Image (tube, rainbow, N blue to C red):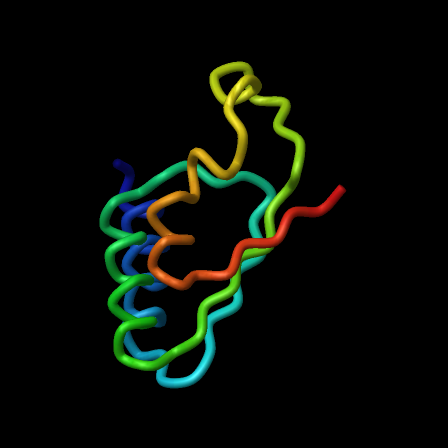
Length: 86
């Protein structure tokens, strides 16, 4: 992982850790990142609400046949709200 990417990842995760009330994430595509997912679930367990808005259709070849629900199962089971655009 490049330094810039690591800095961005650390920045996002640190902000999720600091969240007390609400986390809103808008991202065109989601792929599971265990460290990020874990921090998001921990924030919800501490009382913050978490919402993710993502694309309903994927054009990435590796994910084209996978439904978002399959990628978001763990987060959904842990009270993270997930919405898809059409």
